[in-house]
Image (cartoon, rainbow, N blue to C red; front, side):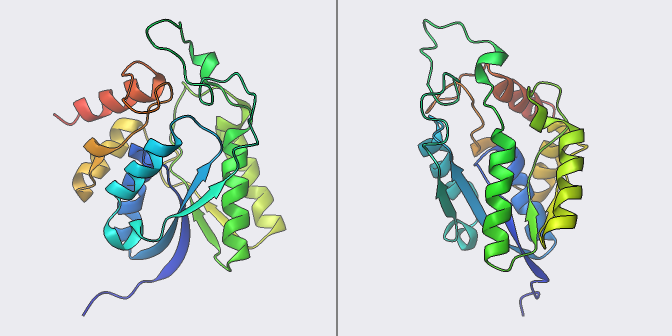
Length: 210
């Protein structure tokens, strides 16, 4: 007899290493979840969604919900939206900044969850000094969690918040998550560039397992 699912949650999922490991972490804890993918106009959205459906077990890949908000950042010069020519363009970390992206993702996830009577939302944000922006720091997440506790029924869960990418990759290896198939590139829409902050952190994390 299969083990009973203890509760239900929403998982913010992108096909990246961290959220993929979190999906397997939730499964290990018998927490049923709805994978939620947000299309905010990122140039890699097709690859991300294809990857997400590939790395999740079938019972969850069939349940992926997609929220499309492509107009939000229409016209933005961010290289998350406007794909660079990596043969020609010089890209710096600041070029990959997208204002209030995490706030948008989490607000979308919370609204989605509460509208469906789900009271927990999980996201795989980790400890990093590379991510620019006020909605990437510990203070932001703390304030948001406090706000949610006072204004609604949904609790935000960030179980990897104090972890490094290498620590998350190690958890993924233990859980047999297909971390080698994940996609985390910020600069390229189809083939990982290998040089953006996400690619560097992902490759270093996987190499640390060898």
